[in-house]
Image 1 (cartoon, rainbow, N blue to C red):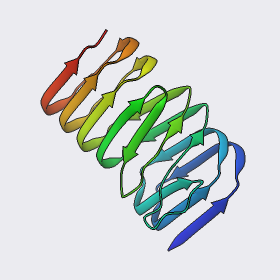
Image 2: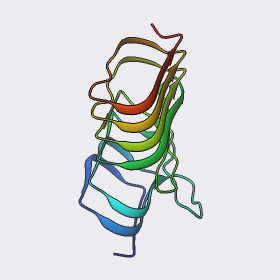
Image 3: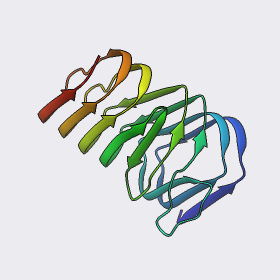
Length: 154
């Protein structure tokens, strides 16, 4: 399809699987879980603000799972806030858990966050940076990258 827009959505679960679209827009979505898997599209957007490039912003959910996503970069900016730029969309996610698996990206930077566990698994990237983190456990498994940097980690 060329475009799909769903506004003011409240649901327990949303699953988008094997989607080939030019644009996807979900606006003001309040849900318990969001699952986006094997997505091939020009832009993916979950927004409460419309933008030209479509963006994912201010999503309140219990869990976010992003699997098999080809991104340019993903990084965390503050406690419980994740910012991902992929296919020209940004996201600020407030959540209880984050799972990122099988991600091919140029760089992954995780900065200034507090969580129980972070596990990037099977990640192919140029660089991984984890800075100023407060967490119970950090697990990075089967990683092929040019450089790995962990600073001020506990």
